[in-house]
Length: 115
Image (cartoon, rainbow, N blue to C red; front, side, top):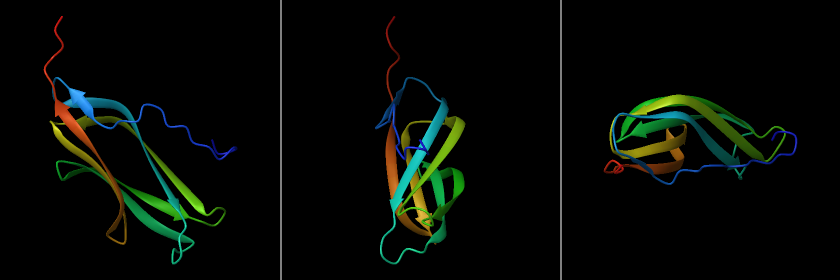
């Protein structure tokens, strides 16, 4: 919430299990929170890249600014992300081609549920 400066995270994924592929994730939000540290510029550009099994499937520029706060928050919303098969879904934030943050979610193939 921009007015109260709070953020609620609901349905955070640590792994995803699917009985079939391709898997369509209808809606996904990626959140990156960065505190300003010594040496950080007041404003700089970053890049969020999303990879499946080391192959890039999407990337988004992030404009980072500490002009009004010592904490920056980027929220990127995606609709209908298609995951072609099992493996690792990695989210990486880079600044000047240097990785500054990453998070990986295992995507697992599981047997179909029995009726």
